[in-house]
Length: 335
Ligand code: F6P
Image (cartoon, rainbow, N blue to C red; front, side):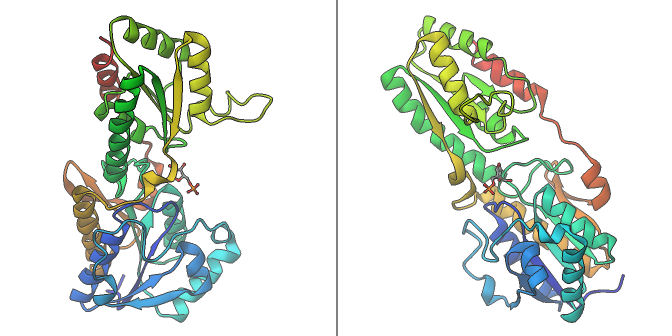
């Protein structure tokens, strides 16, 4: 694959704090290699529509610390069709874009893979607060989201203690419990419910009753949004995971319970220093690969080092939660 002269960069799927820092790193690293960069607006949908704008070093000034994405993001159904893919390929050809960097989660990686199979040199960067990309220890945005949730839990704990209540905190993660597990451990939650481990609500109730018996002034239960939602749907329609768990606890224990659903506030805000650093390193590494004529790869962080993987292999890998961490959270809140 020859060295590209003009590359594109896009952000796709749910946004993640640190995406802007990565865009900045991509643009400035490419310019330093003499490669022109075009920002694609609204992810793969913008690619289909030819919504590209050239980015200069000044275009990415003052964004390293900003949440969201200056390129906007979207989930494109059209891109998943053969017609959508063909339109995107046509745009890349017409604008002589000979390399592309895609920031996003697993859905975005599948889009990137389709372009790779159609002959486009693409490098993907994991950026999702869910952190469910198997080949990386850390996706851009995860650390910020965990810190946001821990900040919320710390505040919730104050009022939970004052009123001697149980508070169920629902966090994002339809299929992945990383935010719940990491924030639950850091926030000292009494119980953590994640999609990867079958929920035993009677055990949660027993732990809560025990906690109050031994003199704890509150109980915090962290629930990932994807826990049990299908199985728990009742005839009034599906409830949120937190509502179901909160009602169950209240009925079983008779203790006063409140619910907080953190929702999209987990996706915004200033990225942590760690996310800004990871984003800068991965953005730079992605450009390095394209400049060296290597497409079809994912750039990742493994044990603090930048590593790269073939995109098909990356998509075939399955990520599991760390059982030691799950056990640790359980032990530390058990007595
Ligand atoms: O993929 C990131 C994520 O924030 C998930 O945790 C969440 O389930 C989903 O996106 C929400 O998507 P939307 O913003 O489209 O409602």
